[in-house]
Length: 465
Image 1 (tube, rainbow, N blue to C red):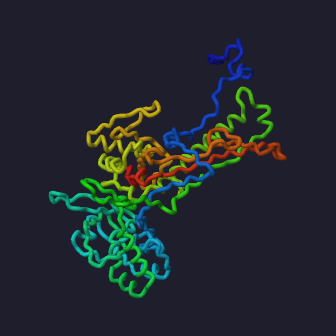
Image 2: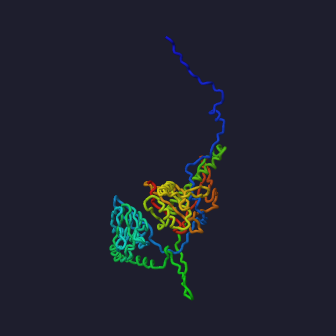
Image 3: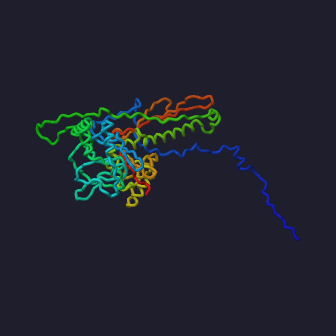
């Protein structure tokens, strides 16, 4: 029997220093700390920043008689929907009326109706005999075109209302047809109920009379107090005398703040500063995060954020759901000198899909050395701070900017103590008993819409199709 030989392979002896060992003595080439949360921050770059001395900026405007163009808020219990009584003050005839008892009585008199998609809610030419509050769903106001065809006047969505003239006028008729686009929940208040309450409430009756008297004052199409001007006359005609009346209670925008405390151990700051300064890198990343928060607040802050401060007459809805070229044209046409659109990247992709469906291929434009998509030559800038809801809807903003054009402006204050960048300070606040240094990093900012039509929003666009 022959023995089987086993061959064992051995590695050759190491003849030089291994790379793993060599790295123990080498200083690796490295980058500065990177951060995934950095975005282009187009809104901050495109807004003209204006000094707000005294931490406030007052926007003076001409006197306006526009009242009650807001939205109504509801509460629901299961499938039952009720209007919040004080929210009835958003209706023009009830703006400023604060009698809680009467408002509660009005709110309790609304009846809930469920409307199917495609069903006509009111028809043009018929008497206005009820007030309608749209609690949920989408509807359209339709008029008649010059050739007898239906034309879309305006889209309606949650919180909108129509028929409020029933509160003040007894013999008006509908000047348009309202048709449900999706299944809708509406609350209806018959005009006879309002007349009954008028007879029992002196305060309500007097308030309605004041509203009617104000509505009779001369005003232009923007609801501003009219400036009487004569033109087209000849000879020695008597010229009208006039003056420009101002809003006696203009809005003041106060600077908001974004702040954090940066902590660094002194041992790290003392011993680990080669080749990069640890304090500088910590501050750089913190400042970048603070700038991202500023961008978020400029869009979403409930006090001065652009999504919340767009005038309700400048809010429109998509005709079919997705952001179509027709919707973009409607948004663009509502103001002069639109500087740019602002949309979530997913929304920009949805705009591209809708254009491709129609064989439309918009040209790109250059903004600050970057090529971006444009519509009608107006750049569409990405901003991931614009919310996308759970059901894949979002909004598109369009704005005119600058004080010279009565547009949207950013507000800040420079020259603050320990300023690191314009309007941002990094202030050393001391070393604690645990040898940790603390820096207070602060930035102060706000945004102001000088004239309502400077900012528009295309709301609830469907970006999931």
